[in-house]
Image (cartoon, rainbow, N blue to C red; front, top):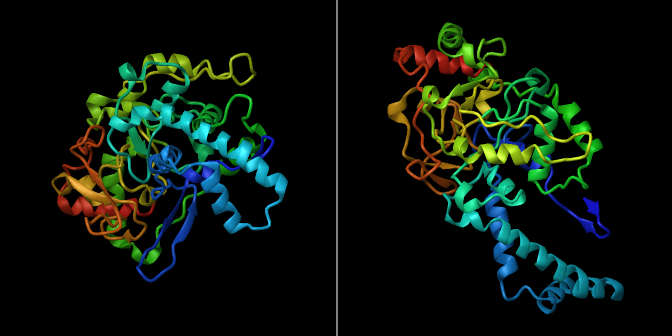
Length: 374
């Protein structure tokens, strides 16, 4: 909440980095701070506001009648402020928002748990979206254990290696400006995230014998890129080596990197670490059980489908919090209660990342069990 001078409410870090999980249908959702917000639909939220602002009923007369129904004691001064200042200003703000996000109308629908991070910056920084826009939707990532990630390539494509710049750029992406950045608030959150651990997978759902065998498979097939002490962890692997959908990589361009490094010009914190890369970053896998769906664009619903490519569905549902402990991912059947992710659409491809898929089937099941322990 900010007073400018009237109270305004906006998004904060938890909007994109808090999720819920249920291990059975009968239990209440467990709120997990720091995990990717796999049920939050940022594009849906923006489109709701855009539709509301374009509705002919968005007028002071209609809205004041609704407001006074809820609060008939509203003072004369507040009624005048709402009618003549706040409602017109809100409509103008939504119209600006709608113009800024018009580029998204022709793009693949993002759905819950995903956001197109960098195309909005192009609008903010004056780049030609007609020439620059790509289907760059990617999963909202977890933000656990940030201390161990200092100096690593950050963001899905590794385009920055500064935790401070990553944090400030996320705030700018959520609507902050160079003048309104709450540096003290960001410092408090960043300090708390440094040692925030991911919650452990329920011990009674782990086959310990399989997990013990899976440790060797992990060391052979995964650790070099994904263990905290791996030789390639925190580095960018070329797209040709990873083979995953290139939409998110293409959405962050060299001209955008140059413009991103102008944010904060003349201030002590001016950005300087953004760069264009040629692939995707190798990320540590702590709390990997809560990162479903998998790959940077969330195009594979479970670890089982990741390691058994023939089981990767072309269409599945995302946005539920009921957990499938066997396949290690959230329930993804095409029944009611989920957003249909179509992997045939631009930016949604589920190919690539075939590392470990050539292991014997039984070894892959052992590996999946071990991954639950990270």
